[in-house]
Image (cartoon, rainbow, N blue to C red):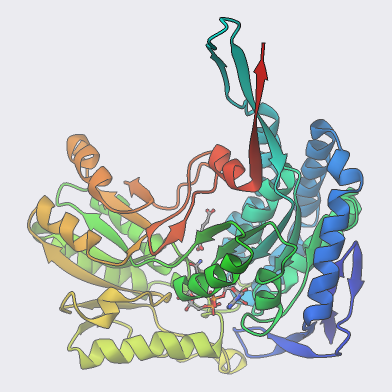
Length: 486
Ligand SMILES: NC(=O)C1=CN([C@@H]2O[C@H](COP(=O)(O)OP(=O)(O)OC[C@H]3O[C@@H](n4cnc5c(N)ncnc54)[C@H](O)[C@@H]3O)[C@@H](O)[C@H]2O)C=CC1
Ligand SMILES: O=C(O)/C=C/C=C(\O)C(=O)O
């Protein structure tokens, strides 16, 4: 059985306590590895190593040298592409096609893009008048914050972890990563790549474990960290913010959502169906940007429901290596229970189950997996928990609407504000509607089309701060103003 250890100061280390937990493949329920669970000792060691590295060669390294190393990390991920794909697919059950098109290439790009960016971003400068007529000159310098705690989720493990580690390292920080307990593999494989690339010891550290009373809490409460970046559930964000408040540590949060798609009657229906198929069912619905509420203008409603149903029923479930498979399991049996509990609520609330709503028949080799059916409902009231709460499963509710004003108000009637997709061929309408939606990200006639230079994050309970491009650099660096009196 494979053992997954912590990575501290450039070395793979076991837990002093000897405690381990199982890493389970959700497609068939098999235990694929034993993972060491960090106690306070390992978290202390990892934070100490990360602090020491700030005072080592990393802390004084020329930017150009740092960028070369990060490019080597990106190349190192691509050089071991198949291993990363396999590790990600075994941990999550997701199809190979998804991991090899999205997770792993994005994992590599997250190092490359921020390495390029940091070299090219200027800081501001102001000349000012002074009473003596000589003036003064102000300019800002960017410095690393120090040790960044990275708490990552399980849905896009390498992609979301490197989306934080890439800019953090590019800005000259060091990191201690706490991957999700469900998906410990790729953060550990990345540690090997860091060593191969020549990243100095202590710059990238990984501690494994759970959240409360485990590695996640020990790390986010640690007095010697200088920033926390987290992606996951909004309630976890609240717990982490409380921890961060004790030492006034800055946070960057990307949290949950209850994202809507709005399909106007003038939309290109083929494109809207293709995009909504991805936004509802990609990664088995476990994408924070995914759509769980679809609003369709009444004249198109029946056709849209019929075609999305056909799409959902054509999804092919199965083992990640099968080239035909495009739909995997959810992450765990516990998450499956959560998703199925919403399927039950939908039934009790009187939903019309257009398709799915239960557990699929799987072949014997996958019968112990965490499978759920892709599901579409209509007919629920807006107050149903199914329409209000984040399910994070392969499902959506579709409702008709009659006017722009009505649909804007429906989309905004949620405590979340992460993402939306608007489908229309009317350019004026697109410009009119998109800014009125209370979200951090709005796609028009697409979904999850990502330019890594753009601001990324949520409003309301979906997040705090923006990452991406220069916006990420604001969090991962400390700006100091230097004022020189002439
Ligand atoms: N990208 C997103 O928006 C994601 C949203 N979710 C949502 O969250 C729900 C629960 O999934 P979980 O994996 O349990 O998400 P979670 O938010 O509990 O876990 C995410 C990460 O935070 C850590 N963590 C949990 N509690 C912590 C604490 N008190 N202090 C420090 N670290 C802590 C976990 O160990 C994991 O690494 C899902 O059903 C889904 O609704 C989950 C994963 C990603
Ligand atoms: O493209 C990204 O940077 C992120 C995409 C997805 C998520 O953030 C998520 O599912 O949590």
